[in-house]
Length: 302
Ligand SMILES: Cc1cc(C(=O)NCC(F)(F)F)no1
Ligand SMILES: [Ca+2]
Ligand SMILES: [Zn+2]
Image 1: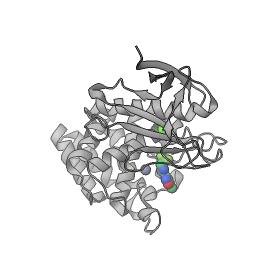
Image 2 (image 1 turned 45 degrees about the vertical axis):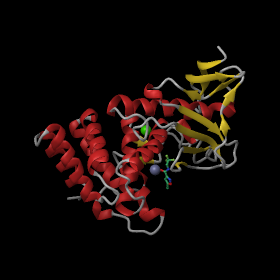
Image 3 (image 1 turned 90 degrees about the vertical axis):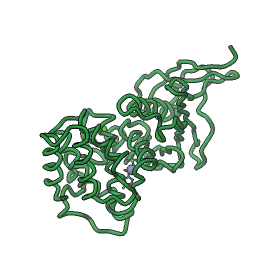
């Protein structure tokens, strides 16, 4: 056979061994995953510290074990995990629900302390080694970024003020749903020299300078109206909901709100209403409905 799907392996950003869905063609192994249902494809590229999309991440022997390949390994593996989460839990085939290829680029720029969805693909910096290490090394970060793509193709929440904070919150909340072992965001790649901290917390947003109540909404012109700050308010409401009705019901309610009820201009009050409508659709007007009301009452959103 001259080309086809292969199974490789490598070490991630934290030095952890993992198997990889790769593709062999003409003497090279590619980080190109063709194993997903409905012909969904996941491909990983390397910008080599430039700011282009970069070429495919390739290896000569299907062992992605060099230090420079660690960010590629995790971007590829975690994109596959997030694909699987949306397909298996919500029957969604890729970010557009039409099986579009999920593209990631790693080693973007130099000392770049961030990751983003650019409208077409995910992009990850390496961090400066103090504030962040390579950002694809955190599954919740990968889920955060891919959820921006889902949001863009569904509710389309405008990235400004309250709709923008909701956009950010959806990414953090689905970051939790994909990686539910803690209520922290980005902890695996944040401040390698400090243990126990994170970029954000949905259980206690105030731990990292975010408000957890409307009384403390941060009015600012920076950061698109403080979208990474004010997301603390809907994040806390989501945490309240998860604790009261459990992850399994909460993720169904959030996915239905995102895909059926929320629109581009939805504000926090609209989000409360969307989540209540979703809860009623799925579980009626009983304990789950009351729990969602209480969750949003507690953050001062009516
Ligand atoms: C301030 C600020 C926070 C973020 C942020 O959340 N980035 C996404 C992440 F996944 F890289 F964390 N960007 O600017
Ligand atoms: Ca986490
Ligand atoms: Zn974001």
